Every structure is written in structure tokens, then in C-alpha cells.
Length: 475
Image (cartoon, rainbow, N blue to C red; front, side, top):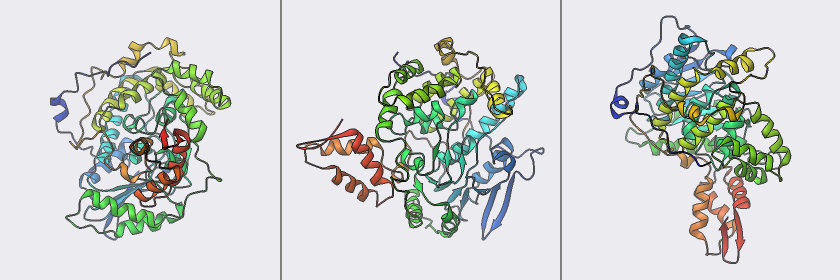
């Protein structure tokens, strides 16, 4: 079935979008020590201090962090092994060690829905501040990066993975949807990688996050303290542009690379024939078609069978809303993505699957399979899915601090080249007798010898090109 036209919301008017927002402020009852602040060598240090919850982001932490971002200076970092955020005094640079999974435990009833919706409003407000920040932001994804940690990481220009990185968007397993700006960044990953990660909650470890486009750099965890120290010493001219500062940080990170694991050790997980199968099965605009494609898969039967098993355990409502979110999100700007996600999140707060999913997967000991309502895909109507994309009558539109907006990441050039970029190059060079080796070398040169480029480009060429008498052709 073809994808329907984009759902519009009359609440998203120019008047409501231009209203000045309020910066989240700390409340008297907020715990005093869930975020720790110190000054070190002229830097303001902010440390996430909620280890019993894997440093998962909550409203109190957001209310402490957001005002510090507003002043555009200081350092923010978290506990060991959990993704850190900091800056040079004078507001030149920030680095972020982001947090682990989870955000809020749902409460039943209208008051619980109101509290949850308010938390998501604060969380998305903070994430958007990072996405539109006026200085380079470096996220060290050195550990579990899920839930709120994804929101703090994925909107940074620099996203540094290590051998300890574990990335996932597990929301469909708890009756929710991939939020924190996933509407923006997942559809912009190569092919159907974003769709696959969103629907299945597949985990990516270490260097796999670099190859997939989640991370922009890969460093060994042993060098992070030295990197942080070096970044804190960087001094930028008052007249330097953001792009110039980004280039300086990019070169600095490259200095500390110890190399990538060999492809013999760690082949590209979402590459080769499996990647072709992912694109083949997850290209459709309905979940039912994806299920059927997996059932029909012949080349990767075992993978398809396991994937079907995984999807069958997910909330049918979550799967359908998530797929629609990703297809629409391809055209959403960064600001619209957060506004629309707040509408979707507010509706999920009123849906039984979210409370049931969190209770079954996160609270029950041992975890159990959730009992979804509706229980099957065919019981979830298109009208029910559409309703998630309209703000509930008692919800106000999310107001964001920064008016800056964009539809493509302004710093994508520091990541590995995308398949679209490689395709454009091959298409432009068609008929000139160029070889695969020449293409790989050209991209390595254009990307200043960036590690991972050679492996990524070679994988794309192997899957998507054929050699003819007059050179490579894209297929």
C-alpha cells in the first residue's frame, strides 16, 4: 500500500512556533546530587551522578543541565563508561559523555500522563539545544547509549564510539517509539538501516556504529582522557567560524586514533549480502509488507526467521507508528521532528502498550513478554496510527529555544561518506573508465585519510556497482 500524504497538524502554526519558550529550571524538590558541578582549570564540570539507574536521564537532570547550556560555556561529563560533555572556557568547545538507557517510568492515570508528557517536553527541548548549538559538541559514546543517551549523543557533530559502545533504540519493545530526534537521524542513515534499527531494536557494538553512520569517529577508550584534556586546551580565535572550529576538533580527534579493528576481526555487520537483504525486506511502507518480505526471503533465511521472531514480540501499534514516523521524518526539519515527536509521545502516554511494555520488560523480575492491546497488526487500523500524529487537545505545542533549523545535518562532512555521496560520484564518473580502486583512493583522499572510509566505500562498491568496459556503473 502506498504511503499516505504527510499528516499535518493545525496546531503547528507560525504563531505558536514563534512563542518564546521557558528554559527548564531546577525545582526545590529535585535531588541535589544527581548532577555534580565543579570547576577545574577554569572549566565548569558537570557530572551525571545517577549510577543506580545507569545515569538515565530524568527531569531533574535536564533542569540542571539546560541552564548551563544556555550560558554557552562549561564542561559536562558523566560517570565512567557512560557517555560526556564539556567545553573550553570562553565557550569555544563542548564535549559530552552521554548517559545510558531509560528516561521515565510511566504512571497510570491522567496525572501520570501529564508528568510524562512534561518530561518529554523538557528532554526534547534539551536535545534541540544540542542539535542547534553554536559550538562544536563532542559526544563520547563510551558505553551504553540508549534512550536519553541517544538524544544527548546523536545531535552532536562529533560522535565518538569506542570498543565499549553499545547503541540501540529499544523503544518498540516497551510499547513506545524511537524518539529523542530519531525521526530526523534514523531516516537519513544509508538505505533501510534506520528502519531496521528502529523496528527490531538491533544493537550495534563498537566500530559497527561508525560503519552504520551512528558514530562519526572511533577511538579506543584508553585514549579518551587524553583526548578530553587536549580538547580542553584548544583555543579558538574570536573571529573563527563554527566550520573552522569543527575542522580543528576533527583534526585533533584524528591525532588520537589507534586504528580500527581489522575486517577479519570485525567485518561490517550491516554490510555485504546482509545489508542487501535488509534493504530488500525493509523498503516497504507498511509493516505487513515487511513481514511478508521476510517470510519470502530466500538468501538469508535464518536471519529473516529470527527477525520475524523479534518483530512478532514487539508492540503492533509501536511498529506501525514507528514506520510511519520514519517515512514522514525524511522530510521533517530538526525542529519539526522534535515538535512532532512530542505529539506522538503524548499520545503514547495515553496508550496501554507503554505502561504494559515498561512493566513487562523493565519492572517485572524476570522480564516477561508484554500483552499488547491490540495484539496483532491487523487489529491496528490506519486511523489509529494517524491519530498519533495529532497533538491531544490538552497538549500545547513544544516550544524550542533556538530558531535555527535545518533539514540536513550541517556537519555531515566529518562522518564517513554516505551511499548517496558515493552514488553521485559514480554517476558523475560513469563512462570515464574509473575503477573501484581509484574510487576508494579518491574518497580516502577527499576525507583526509579518515579511518573507516576505505572499508565503507569498498563495501558499498561491492554491493552497488558493476564493472563494465567503460568503467563502474551504479546498479
